[in-house]
Length: 440
Image (cartoon, rainbow, N blue to C red; front, side):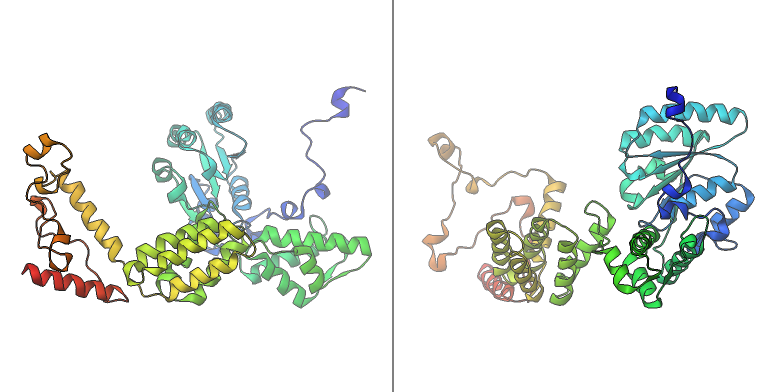
């Protein structure tokens, strides 16, 4: 027997060997569940498909919302050659071969859709390699990404594509997909004669978190369990067992990462310890490095509290040190203590404003000369040149203070730090006002 007979090529695997989520991908627009803003009657993408007027697009949405299924539908309804491509596995070298074939097809009147899954994983050079072929129309690009395109894609490539935003599926939509999979005898599980309890369906859709692929994976796992045991009813306990531990929607390198961090910081700034703890736990349960959270709290202690409560920085730094000392899981208590303290502390952004004002002058006016009286004078020559001359040592004066100007002459009178009326900073404000009175 020849090798070709032993290992037949170009033959798709039997349908039943594919995952349920792949088998149940919609074959026509009417089967597609959700995304009515794109595919509803009279909507942009629906009109484009019906008129067979295809354009390059970026499909941006969370996992399991239908990005790949939608790309396949686009190809099927526009009579184009569909070329799937993984940004993880392929690069510029593979792209060249695809472009050559696309140019050959174009001469025969056939368009080529290049579908790049996880396009955000391509670097700038790889994305730039696409530009001329998208511009010329050699390739119609459909990129799929879970990340914000404005952060992850080159502006030049982004300007040549229409960004279509896909939303997470609602629980009613997920229920429709699950029921269809149970009833479909050809692609789904209909041949098994299974049913699902109403409360189990609700639980399954809740656990799926807007992700159709996850919903079907849970369903498939539950069905496999029943097949082994000979049962026919999927109940709530079986759904929970199949789902095991819910994977929180949180990507440490992606947009949702920044959304949750943003919610955490804004809760601290808004003096809401309850919300701050919730968002912090969300990050920890999703696998975030506690040191990342602690570093954010250290920054927050100076940026948003500052001298309104100088102890806040000490608490944040102590929590970081405590985590390094004891580690997880015990150090979650240190994080919680720090988060609640920072949330409850009086707030002031005077340190941030002081830095910003000073930085603006430094950038605008450049490196202004240090006044002679403030210069270091370690040698006789420097002292002869006037370095340090007329400097008055504050500790030689009553109250350890002497009226003096320490800024460059060009910035005389400028003030950067303006204490607030919040917390301890109110005392600092009173102190500066007292000193200003002596100057006056």
